[in-house]
Length: 602
Image 1 (tube, one colour):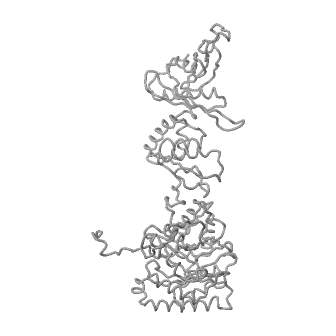
Image 2 (cartoon, one colour; image 1 turned 60 degrees about the horizontal axis):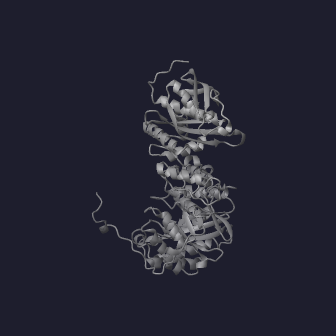
Image 3 (tube, one colour; image 1 turned 90 degrees about the horizontal axis):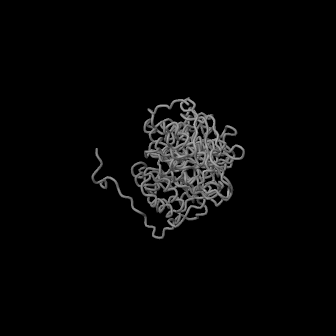
């Protein structure tokens, strides 16, 4: 069936709520929320092949090692210190879930002492009892009860009225209280969370009413507040509407100091991150989600994105992604789902640039940053976050294919060979790289580009020209002119090159006269039928202290044509480096004329 011409007959338009004095648009995020990772429960339920439940494998998801959310744990920060919370299972859903939870509790040293295990249950007394039994004995537990509150679910799924819903929620809360915090035999510190499921599609006044009734039944305190989780079970509107709903709830609910308002956003419209950020601005102080957003349908909110969004704004999220690759490894192994290469922050390509203009801007940004410290203000085009802060290297920032330009190629050569190519050489070599990328039909690896540069400019292997021996000295055949009588152009400043070059494995003695080392060698090459003029010359040092070398770059024009060739020379002696560069250009010149006959050996 094709898309409807008039979808309004089938789908209703969401409407903003009446909140004329909304405050959230002028708020900013200036601190991290309480985090709760639901990977082991919500994320696991959404998998085609559920996680392996063996305690040895799935326990790895719970092992706190200071990485990310402690390998699927949320590190929470509030006035009382550091907390960890994670929703581990739906114990009443299956014997497997129940046994997994019990083994977590009963196996020593699997759950760190400062971790609160959260378990989920529907609003049914028998299921609540099963859920409480599964986690009894752990140091801290959060009992999470949910009941749908939207008209859609009340009419179609539950078949009860709003009054029925309130009565059920109160009865289940009182029962839960009797077997948890009011149970003198319990060895667990209990927290309570209530979710009006489908909150974003509910009557807000009814949500406030049912939460007030639950709060009265549980009797929270400031030191142990009740958690009201307000989920976008299905994302149904733009994030600003969700933020309005959160702010409305926070304004209407009483005893706000005894309440923690929690968010649980799904990504059906692709706006879960924005909805969670705006929801915090609207008054929420806790966020539930999964690492990299795995969850039902299009997934839950991505906690990695939320956390690093804060970090990139100068706010430490109180979660550590200094080695994001290790977090990715655990998530991918556990979920058997690869992280999208374009996933924010964690994707393998998100810090990479292929576009020529992007690469050039990034290269210039890094050049401008030379000499600065790691903690100096970060200002690099196209990179909102320093890749090194999350364990990525600069080597992968710029990658080269047929769409790449001179900046990206120059960056790779600079990073791998320490050669700061002049602009003209960047342009010339980028054309060589593009031709190779087009020929192979794929991205070129950094090592391939490095080898291609060395081959193109005869830095390794067997170049067509090599310098066997040479001597450069003042030309003694000219009469001596006293210093006071010399002019700038006097012949006494001329230099004579005498040497031996190897051309295609044949040695040739050559001599030439010029006003310096390069011009004398260029004139000496005339004896071999090679007529090159030096058009551009630049040099810089490579390395430091005793290991310093000179890198020289020479652009030459061929006599009688518009052809230009580049040469590169590297040597401890700057003069020999420049001579090598000229011979490199001569090799390139002869490569462009494959049918040029060799001269008679001298």
